[in-house]
Amino acid sequence: MSRKYLIGDVLAAMERREIEVYYQPKYDATTNRLKSAEALARWVKQDGSVVLPEQFLTSMEQSDAITVLDWYIVEKVCAFLERLKAEGIRPRPVSVNFSRWHLHEEDMVQRLAGILDAHHLEHSLIVVEITESAMINEEDRMREMVAELHGHGFEFSIDDFGSGLSSLSMVADTLPDEIKIDRSLLRKNCEDERERIILESIFLFANRLNMRTVAEGVETKEQLGFLRTCNCNLIQGFYFDRPMPEEMYRERLINRDKNVVEEDILQIQSETAAVQLLLQAVCMRYPLIIYGNLTRNSFYMMTYDHFTSKGCPSTGTVDDLIAHGTLSMHPEDRERWNSTFRRDNQLKLYQEGAREIHLITRQIGDDGVYRKVETSNYFVKSPASEDVLVISLCNNIGE
Image 1 (tube, rainbow, N blue to C red):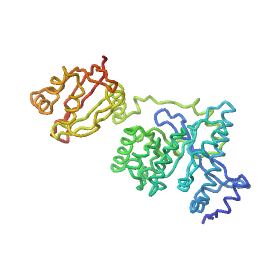
Image 2 (tube, rainbow, N blue to C red; image 1 turned 90 degrees about the vertical axis):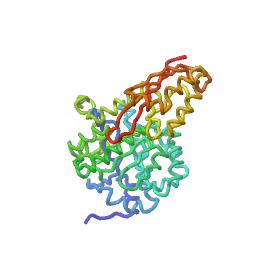
Image 3 (cartoon, rainbow, N blue to C red; image 1 turned 135 degrees about the vertical axis):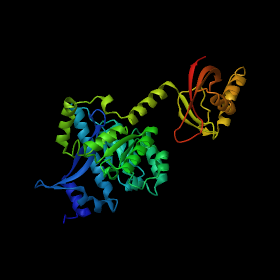
Image 4 (tube, rainbow, N blue to C red; image 1 turned 30 degrees about the vertical axis):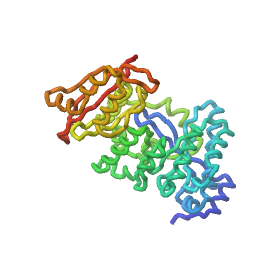
């Protein structure tokens, strides 16, 4: 049985500088390029033997002694990144694990910023990683800390996402920059239908919220292939690299991009990922996209960016949406707008065989200026429902 080391043993090892940082790279799922890394603690004894973290972290995590180790790791990572810059090697962001005890350090973010400033590093080079279990019963403090981190230019990552403890409302409120998918969700090699559905749902939800996704524990070609189809951003696991000492990681940074063989994106992107790319292109073209159910009198806004007016409700009834739009139109265009897009008229047009409606009107912006807006409604059919659905694409076309 492996020995379980006590807090005093670990603190003494830090004094002797025996606790070292190993780096496990994270690779772009599409291009295979090294993008970032995670810092992991390893106890390397004087005889060369390596003590794995599960033999000493458990005792440390039982008290706030773990914070001493965390700050020790931060200092070593920042010193390493500063050396890389001095050598002319472009450093990549590094994720550093922080325990739940840091949530009670009032100056945690200021202290972190001070360490990076002392090493002349951009704050974006350190990603603060906290396991989702640490968030339980700490919702208010988590929101405050993430806001502080973002205010100082740091990124925040939720580790072990999907292990069964996370609150989706917490994710929505804190808006992490990154979520790391728990390795337990890959245990069936992405060949189980239920496992695949869960993973697809997580990636879809993360992409819609513009969160970077990392799959950890990736070990097989089958896992990598499926994760690519889900539009996963970063891959971390033995398939590419095991955790490695500082010098070996330095060599990876120098040599990996020189030797990487990129695959043709058209060959590795699946239909699911291709649809995601198509949606990105559509959203670039149309600043306002609304998905409506005419039968059930409901809608929600799919995207709303840089449009004429910012007062449009994000969800509600189609009737209210049309009423709101009517009030924002130029007086000479209101009747034409209302009569065209009234829900009963759209249903009537659909029954008569129409599949799209186009109209140009003048809509007042938040600055009080009327601008021309082109609204195109497309009637669509869901294979799972008889409801009449409509997608509205709206675009500013000038004054």
